[in-house]
Length: 471
Image (cartoon, rainbow, N blue to C red; front, side, top):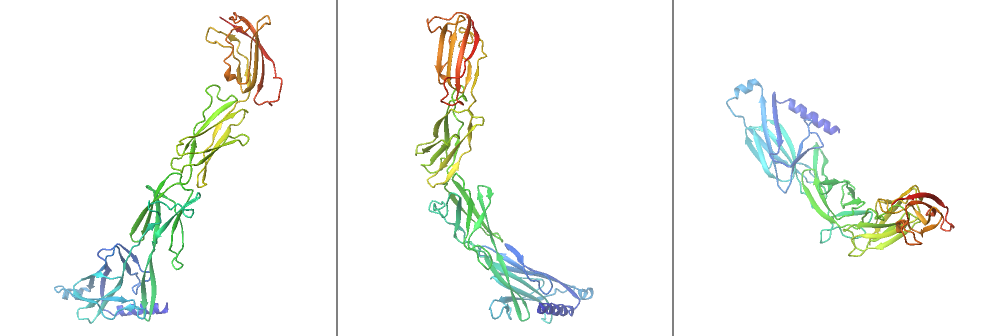
């Protein structure tokens, strides 16, 4: 630190002894791919520049110099073009030297500009002197970094797919790993003060992005790192919760100076997937117990064959297991609901693949109504718009109805377990087979709901009432 300060004071004092004049100049590159400032500041208190060249091209530098004299000297020389001697020096990377070479590799006498191309990687110093070499006016330093680029390729099989092993493709995650390592390059340069050379590093870091189509997705990179730089040496991208469809990924690697490489890879899913279709209920009285329901599911056509479909019907743990086959496009099963429920039954489907990966489909619901008997209907027109006498009944497991004439003669009786099988009384006297005449009739009903114990006997009731038959 002290040596650095002394060197700067020396340069300032030396410059202050020069004739009164202002020197303007900049050592730059005509064409370059990127640039970065040095970590150090030179004797003038500013950072030198590192110019970056990609794609195997050599470097080039240019210095445009202008010296503004005081007005008195400018009048004397206004008719003469002032010439300067530009000397180019290359930095010697010999570990025992680490300084600019003593002899210039290129000297040019010119009025205001000097340039050189086909320059190798390293440091360059250009000095500007008067034409008689009696006076050193200014010194400029720049560095050239020839960016070597990098190779980047993903590890995959001959079909351009993720290798199907438990290491790289599991139910919980998928690993996409490099086949060739994309490593950053480090350019070394030095800041030198008398008797001391301080090593500096320009790290050309590589960053990675991952895309599905045009959408960038989150990337979690894991791998071995260089303990010196922290940069990945071997690299894998891990994606949790892999998709249930075949998906192509694009990986893009970019360094800080515009070199870009990309590679695509196909992920063949091992994750099963299915959606439950709307349950198929009876055509009539759909939610009156018993409710026979057919469940169907559309399996994932991308998943391997022979997946196993396990249905759970939301009641007493009942389930059904169905193994798919190569020609199965719809996984289906049937279940009958007898017991009414105030809250709908939740039906789920779990699909298990041959890789033992599982997926649980979004549940669907089935409602089974509470038992109810409504005998309010009191008009019956066999030859009209209401051709059958049938009380409204829901979720009854046993039902018996007896119809009497007004004089107490039984003319009709029905007993059954499912009212869906009974259309009702059509007005025919079952004893005689003749049509019952217009008049008032009396009925009694005994019924047991599906919410009652199956051992209950006899049927509760009777319910009774009158109704009118009109012809």
